[in-house]
Amino acid sequence: MAVKSLFEKAEADNLQRAQPLAARIRPATLDEFVGQQHFLGEGKLLRRLLKADRLGSVIFYGPPGSGKTTLARLLATESRRRFRQLSAVTSGVKDLRELLADARDELTTGGRKTLLFIDEIHRFNKAQQDALLPDVEEGIVTLVGATTANPFFAVNSALVSRSQIFQFQPLSPEEIKTVVRRALADKRRGLGQHEVRLHDDALNFLAEVCEGDARRALTALEIGVLSSDQRPLEFTRQLAEESVQRKAVSYDATGDAHYDTISALIKSIRGSDPDAALYWLALMLEAGEDIRFICRRLIILASEDVGNADPHALPLAVAAMQACEFVSLPECQLTLSQAVTYLACAPKSNAATVAIGEARGDVREGRVLPVPVHLRDAHYAGAQRLGHGAEYQYAHDAAGGVAEQDYLGVDRQYYRPVDRGFEAELARRLESIRQTLRRGKGRDDAAPGPGKPAS
Image (cartoon, rainbow, N blue to C red):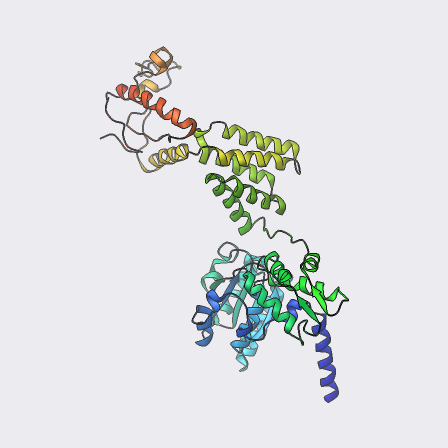
């Protein structure tokens, strides 16, 4: 028995040494866990659920390296549940059903409850997610699902409604420093057996460059220490820079990053900040975003947010789309940069956007107006007998090219140009036009309010 125990201990030690540093130094208790104090701190929701022994199913949502897997393991320990793990990337319904059956057998024979951790749960299809529902609802398993995608879009709504959602934040630079220092001090699981003096500027560099991902910081630290023969080791900033791999841009082309980043680009252009707009454009280009998607959104913005304040915006956005199709990357980044900076610096108006929204609202919500008789088509036989086109005034024959004529039958004012860019000129021109048109309605007083009939 003793021989077997020694053999098992040696085997466990060998497995641990084979693990990367980030896995070896996982916190053993909640008190060692770094970060996420907005829901795990003293008195916060998750901590209170544990103290009350009322931990139900939860979904952890957040970026890589923020501690989702580690915290799931700690929850199993704290709640005295068995820990079982599946990856939605590699597991199917068969694996899931076998694990759920085992959890039910364990519980019915007087054993412990099971905490089932499913990594990348958003990658389970609807049928796989549905298979979880009965056992989650009955309490056979405590589900902890981890996802980098917004669960309100990516996870079955029935599962979401039965779970507490905890959103993880990237670790702060100070929290990353705490993790790195702990790894260097730990002689059993970390790098404490090596003689390492970590320079402050190297620590600051790791804390910033890893962008809140503790796993990335620890990987760089381990590479730097193990690849250097010098002992004691002076871990300088240069060594830190040489140990950090270029990070692939975290960007899911169908998930939150896709929509959040284009939203940031559009709002930066709308807010007339070309520098911010260029950054978000650069992020999408580095991440491999579909160029056609970017072009479509710029064309929409040119009408929605610039409009007639700068009539050149729309043809420029369309030209950018055509140029990108013709030139392609990498050169078309120049075209996109030109279009984005022009649109950001252009005067802004959403008057056309508001106008069509109000007009369509009137059509949907009110009685559809008949076409006035004098505007109806008079080009077919019998139209004159119906009175169509009678009393119509040809605008080109009128003074100034505007006839005193009613074109709608009711008083409505949808388009209200802003006092910016070319639209300011349109506003002045339109005021004179509307005075003439009001005379055609038999009115010569003030214009009606937005989307409302004249009083």
